[in-house]
Amino acid sequence: MKDTFGMFIHVSWKSSGHEMEYFFECPYCWERISIIIDTSVNDQIFVEDCEVCCRPIEIRVVLDNSEVSSFSASKTD
Image 1 (spheres, one colour):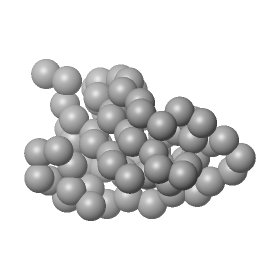
Image 2: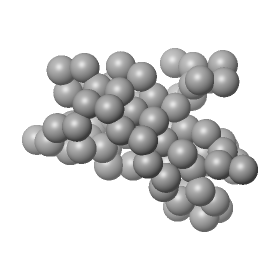
Image 3: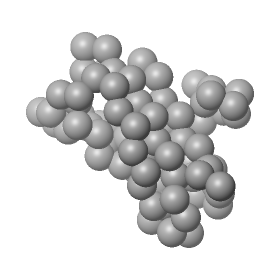
Image 4: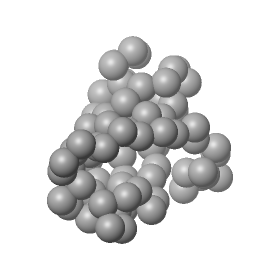
């Protein structure tokens, strides 16, 4: 999968009810990290700090039938 800047993002996910754990690479430190996505909301934009380097990441997620159809993780600066 490519993000909005054409960079490849390695992703995987686990789903449970209305929550999904989504794995991706931080755009700053390139470590594999995860976020919890609420699958009851189809279009989401939020900022989450990397759990490794603590830098802010803008997350954009689009869901279709509770599955990720579009995902981007971008630097905020």
